[in-house]
Image (cartoon, rainbow, N blue to C red; front, side, top):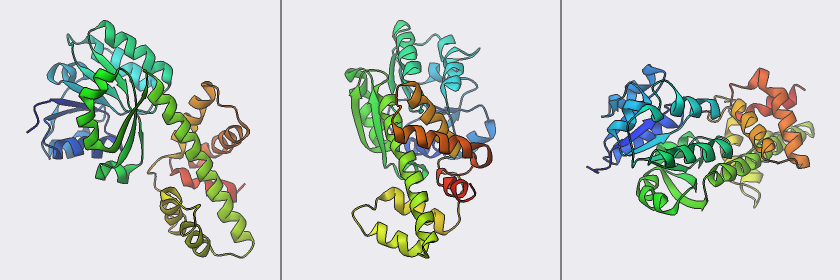
Length: 285
């Protein structure tokens, strides 16, 4: 068994398989989630349960966070039983959530004041990559903290790269997710255009995926389109959140403005479905 005690906060679609990877790697893992039912599957494979973030950080050496937005991060740190309420120091806190660079810079400063280290380490990849430890992890923070955390990060992803100081990981993730939005809308528009010309979706996707333009995204989301499967691996509402964060950081290019408008318009009807449900929004426009 690995001696480093891991804490994990946030058990959504990504958090459960990622924490599970660390349990499989023989780390002692303690988890916390607001929805207590989601803790059950990890408890069944060996995880301990904490009643609050404060209790969790006191019992562990490295704390991972994987939640949805800045508000959730603020609550985890500053809440009534949050991380900052604990008498804990010399811990590494790794925030893997897709949030603003600003909240990471703020939390990094607070962590330093309390004797802890903070890394922002969002991931590229979806549920399948989380289940197989094949995520790509972009990290912002101090190199010494990164070097200490890297062996653990390598259990979660096939690549963990330090890209700059605190906030840089989040900025990189917003750039990548902007490209994700471009891909999704571009693929959807391409399929609809080809269909209008009498080309079958299956034939078009077969050609794309055997050409230089094909990639993992077009394969996975192309399969979702042909199977009419829009269950959320990455919910459309989350790309709206990410595009807004990128806009707040200064992304204002023509493509960025267009995809934000398209996904915002689709959110009320398709927000809980997968990002590629944008094809339904465009078709019904």
